[in-house]
Length: 62
Image (tube, rainbow, N blue to C red; front, side, top):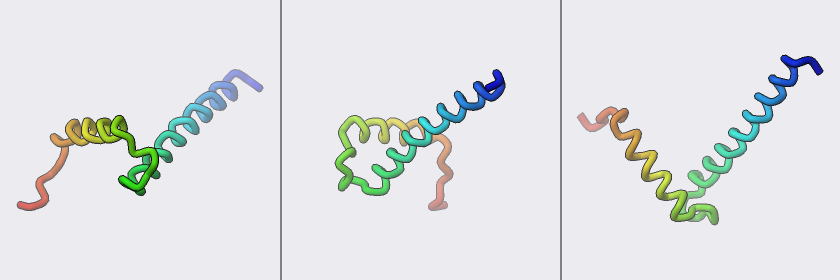
């Protein structure tokens, strides 16, 4: 394997790892409170993300 191919393989492996994390997160969000993985820590992360994204929201009730 050439050096560029190794870099590509490393990048693909990293991308797969990130996608696996997001897949789990989307699964938890889809199941909501019924998910066995909806922990207080996960809820706290959701609350923090919601707070950080607040400034990007567009008021839809105007």
